[in-house]
Image 1 (cartoon, one colour):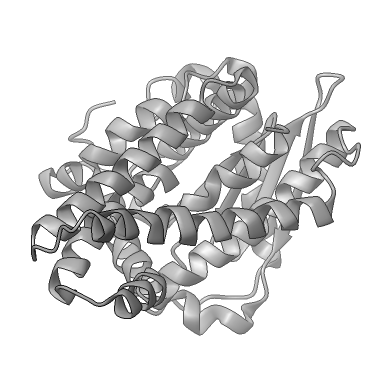
Image 2: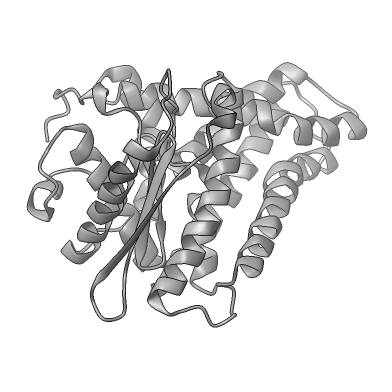
Length: 319
């Protein structure tokens, strides 16, 4: 598909995430999921989100934090549903309690390993330059991110999840371009998407460098507090950048913003089979079918694929 061809912005932002043998999609307050059952058929479900948080879902910066929290919750629900639909719920991480425990551990790891550890390493190394400190910290954080995703992708089970991740992106591209949702047409599109959660993570790393550079040299106490309390601000800024890139993905500015994330998606997406694309289409159709049930929204509620899109899926594979 030609990069010069503009997307149909009237479809509104849509996002999702890969599940074990399935896909979850969301647009506005509606979300749906589909999974390939063990007998080869496709099971689907759809839900709508309450309207009570609408004002926060459209507020700049705040909506990014909202999207992260809601995606973590929806990813957990969708993964548990998919496992039950396939008959995989055997108590080995697929139960609701097990999934919430996995998400809680993942959040602690994100704050501790991804948020604090790089700063602690640089501080202990005695690096205190206004530029060298955040730059070195950012490079360490980038190394942790890329290394984790690369190691995760060595698992054959996770590779299948990554292929469903590619199917999700390709299907969203086709929907945004108003192309017929059949595998032969969807295959014309890239498995990379500017609103991907892994692209979001990379933008977070880059954004963090700039934010911390403005903070300057800090004591141990301010370093720890700043890295923890600063996460929502960094996430909000990164979210706005990803959202902007998604709206301008066929323009130079959009391609520049998404270029590093596009490279990273070479690790977290794989070429899907037609069967996987069919599941992604079923998830999208389930999401759209739920929309008449959703309360009216006065403005668009951005719902990109978020950085947590891999956590529930990876946990579901029993890693």
